[in-house]
Length: 182
Image (cartoon, rainbow, N blue to C red; front, side, top):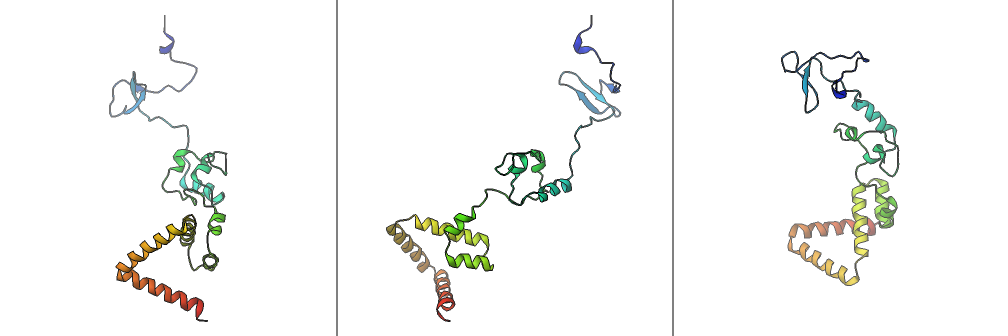
C-alpha cells in the first residue's frame, strides 16, 4: 500500500533529474526542510521582474504629488495597486513626492504679503517661505509677555556675539534702503 504523499504524479511531463547528494553537476537545492535533493537546473521563478525604466515610466505617468503609498494603493490619492512593495523600495527609482504633502493654503495664510511676493518673484525658495510661515504661526500662538521674553533672550544672544550683531545691523540697513529710500 502506497502513501499519498510519496506518490509522484505521472500526468505532468516535468520530471526533473535530481540526486540526493550535492555534486558539481547537481548543485541546485530543491525540496523541503525534511527532504532536500539537488537538481541540474535552478528553480525558475514564475514572475518576470519589471525593469527600472518600465517602473519609472509608470511613476512619471502619474501626478507628481503621489507618494510611494499611492503607488502601493494605500495612499489618499489612489486605491489601486500599481507597484509592489519590493518595487517601490528600489533605490534607482525617483519618486517626486516624499513624506507628507504640504498644504499650501496654510503656508500662504501664515505668511506676510512681502514673503509671498518674494516667493512668486523667485527671490526666496519654498523652504524659506515655509520656515517664515511656521515662525509666524508659532509667534502668533504666543502671548505678548512670552513674545517679549523670547525677543529679549534672542537679542541678548545676538549682543554677546559681534558677528551676529554686525549681521543684524546689515540686515536692518538693507531693509531700510529697500523700503524707505525710494
